[in-house]
Image (cartoon, rainbow, N blue to C red; front, side, top):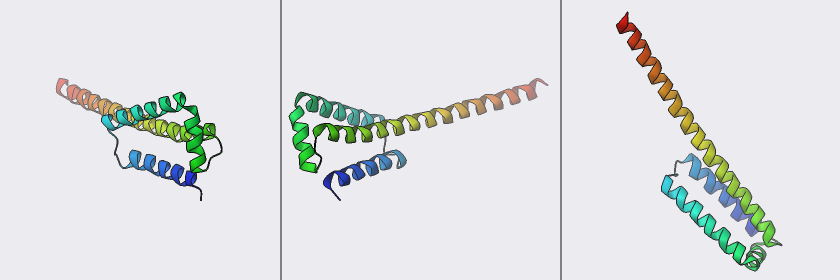
Length: 111
């Protein structure tokens, strides 16, 4: 197994642990996005650096490495959006349930 395979598998496991073990918080999310933005900025400013890193971990080109890691990043974003949608659905269900109970109680007291 090559170095990049180990890194990518570890990244996937970290993303899964982050989402399913409820390690997420607004502050951690902000830190992750800021770090990813800073890394992206550095890699754009120094494109030769990406090729050197890629060669070190067993990838031929820096562009390929960026592609592999962008897949991880977009997977993280998709899971983050899924978690947000689930939370909104749960909140909506609670609100609708509370309104239904209130209306039923109101109808019973007015009868």
